[in-house]
Image (cartoon, helix red, strand yellow):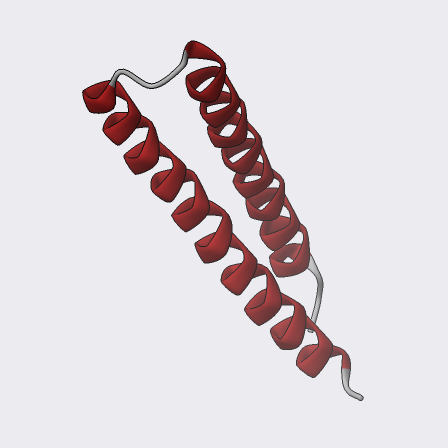
Length: 74
């Protein structure tokens, strides 16, 4: 396969990963807000906060991977 096509393939994969990671973080944020309304147990809230932080960090890593792929020559 041509190098240009590999670059495009990896870019598409990482773009999709980024969307999923960002959406997961937003979903957990929404759940956390609902827990606040319901006065959920503090351990549940802490777990959700950790999940949000993890997904946000994953999105950051994926952004870096996208930058690396985009720096590659065609």
